Structures are given as C-alpha cells and as structure tokens.
Length: 90
Image 1 (cartoon, helix red, strand yellow):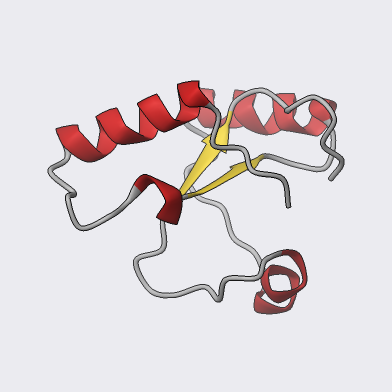
Image 2 (cartoon, rainbow, N blue to C red):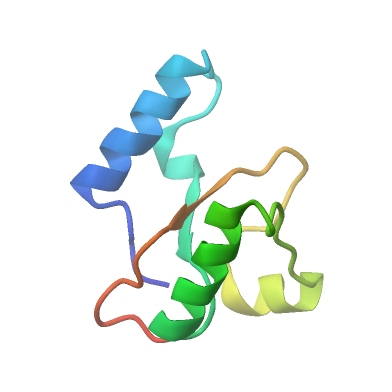
C-alpha cells in the first residue's frame, strides 16, 4: 500500500490530534485510505457521507488481512481522503 501521508494530510491529522488532545496517538499510526475502488465510487460514497446518509464503514477481517500488514486493533483510527489519489488502484 502506498504511503498516503502527504504534507497536507499530515497537517490535517496533526491538527485533529491537537484539537482533540490525543497525544497518545502518533500521526503515522493513522491509516490514510480512500473510499471505494475507483474515483467514481469514491465520489458516490463521499456524497453519501456529506449528505449524512453514510455514517460508518466496515470491512471483513479477511479483506483487512489481505490488504494491510498491520493487524487491526480496538480503537484503530483511519483518515479517509476525499479525492481518489492519482496513480493508486483499488
């Protein structure tokens, strides 16, 4: 999985952590990912989030273990990009 911690995303995460007082979480510990498996799906899913219709996301453990090296744990945090990153395939 490519490193999606761009300077703008790192700044966003660090502002969130500071505003919420979460000194126990490091920026690099937060997964940065994108919605869906294409730019079109990402746009559709984002529109549902912005409308308040989509309020959560889920994945199977099998899919997680296939896509990620780090095991998922309770209190896991993720940041979802609102734009599909160029050069990244689902």
